[in-house]
Each structure stands twice: as structure tokens, then as C-alpha cells.
Length: 238
Ligand code: ADP
Ligand code: MG
Image 1 (cartoon, rainbow, N blue to C red):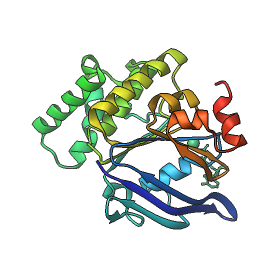
Image 2: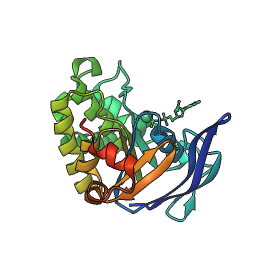
Image 3: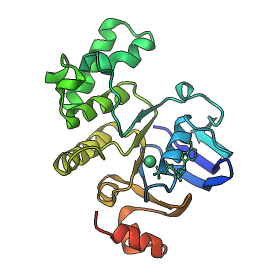
């Protein structure tokens, strides 16, 4: 479990300001949800934490370590994207184990870890299949498994459920919550869906136009919205 601290993180693309001095303190083991409308800068912020995007200003710490200038593979993170991006020619087991092979773990070690994760996500019966033989929900489980198996200090998810239908989304919400209760990894989760935010978050960060509008426990965001934007956004139906 690792604390993640963002201090005055800013991002410009050319002259367009996408993030203005974002300060966030993600507690060890916390499930923090970034919630806001499309285009408000959620993915950009997550990508900066992942090291996929360089901030224009500010600093990022994991625990005591300044990771602002580190490459993604030096940060001890794992990320799940909206599109699962599984390797189409590899079996589910190889998809999940691939990152471990790259790290030089031996075959028995990889198999044991893959089996653990598959059990956790209830995809043990799918390990020999190819991604094209899976439903969308199953593919997303594999994508989550591939990230989890690396046992990252910080777990990052960018709208991981938005390609799923409503029923699957509801099921996966429950599973993600259970998963977090068991693993207690520090998690930063991006969504524009307030139901997801409400269900999963220990705290919600409501963003709009590159700024944090409010950062509070879900019940407080609903009961005491900081401004009209928050009230309108969390009150609107999905
Ligand atoms: P969200 O994930 O909340 O939908 P994004 O972080 O993807 O928002 O984008 C925030 C803003 O930054 C948008 O206006 C988007 O058009 C802009 N943006 C994102 N990436 C780039 C880029 N590489 N170059 C220029 N503008 C970008
Ligand atoms: Mg996005």
C-alpha cells in the first residue's frame, strides 16, 4: 500500500490548458474515483500518474519517492484501459502471464500467480481460450487480471467498464469492490458514471474543466455539493 501525492500538477497541450494545478493526496489502500464529464482532463491526469504523459508542472510522489521523472515501468503501477487491448493470438493464461515473463519469472512461478488471479476473478475455466472466444465482460476480467498479477503498488483504471452493457457493468462494479476489499491496493479509478463512483469510491474527486471541484466521501459529495456544477453533475441521471 502506497500513498500517492500530486502537488500542483499542471498540463498544457500547446496553449490549451487541460489541467490547472491539481493537488491530490491518495491515502494508502484508498479507492479514489476521478469523476467528471468527458473532456475535463480525467484521462490526462491518470496518464500523468502512470507516466504515460509528462506534466507541464508540479510533482508526483509515491510514498517518499519522487516519481515525476520516472518511466512507467519504473513506477510500480498497473493500468487497465477502456479498450482491453488483449494479445489476440495468445491464450488467456499467456495474456495474464506475459508481463511476468518479461520480468524474468520462471514458468512454475508464472503459472502459480496466473492461477491465483484467475481464481480471484473467476476465470479459471477460460485460461486456455483466445480473447476472441470471450464475451466483453470476460475480456475485461482478463485485462484486470493482467494488471493485478503484477501486484502493483498503485492500480490505475480508466473507464474500465464503459464498453460493457448495463447488467455486466453492475456485476463488475460489485466484483471490483470485492477485489479491492481483499487486496487493498491504492487505486485511482476514472469514470464519468456517478453510480460507479458512488459504489466504488472511498472518496470522489469531482473534476470539471481541468480543476478539482470537490474531493470528499461519496455521501458528502451528494449531501453537500461544493458548488452548482457538482450538484448538477452528481444529481443528473445516467
Ligand atoms: P477525459 O478523460 O476527462 O474525457 P481527457 O483527459 O482525455 O479528458 O482530455 C482533456 C482535454 O485535453 C480534452 O479537451 C482533450 O481534447 C485534450 N487533450 C487530450 N489529449 C490531448 C493531446 N494529446 N493533444 C491535445 N489535446 C489533448
Ligand atoms: Mg478519458
